[in-house]
Image (tube, each protein chain N blue to C red):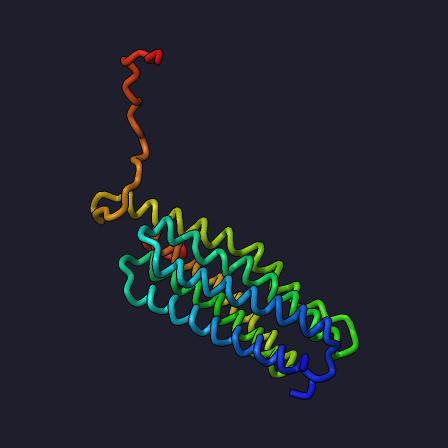
Length: 130
Length: 93
């Protein structure tokens, strides 16, 4: 743990703050993943960890290794770019798969999903003036 | 003093990420449907990747970064294949 002593105090405080923020937001995403009721609500919870958890931790890692190795270390940006690109793809595909499975009558619903061809809502009642 | 702050922050981050991993594993175990399990698995991958980054920071070892990158790539491929299997019933058509 000798590398922790050679950091300047401002960098230590910034790194600690970023790491704590990222880990806390990831933990909140996990809590939301367990607590929310419907799958379509649960799909939103871990994105907290995907974006707001990854960004502070890779920034802290970049700052820390740049200072301890006395050179510019930016290869954590690869993870950041990769997560930035792949997260919408995975969650979009997962959401579409779940929607298709819920619309399939043979599998049985346990979520409330609007049907694909929604009938027109009745429009015969006139607008009331208050 | 600064090393104590960093040690406390990195220890807290490891504990929080392990808790998040356990919560995602709990969602993967209880379901209730297949897409919930796939979502829990994907969250476990991301949390394990962040945990690898934090462990690498606390050890001062740059080579945990490659492990984290491999975990991120494998998590992406796993989730896309599982979602495609759930949607179509087969992975490669």
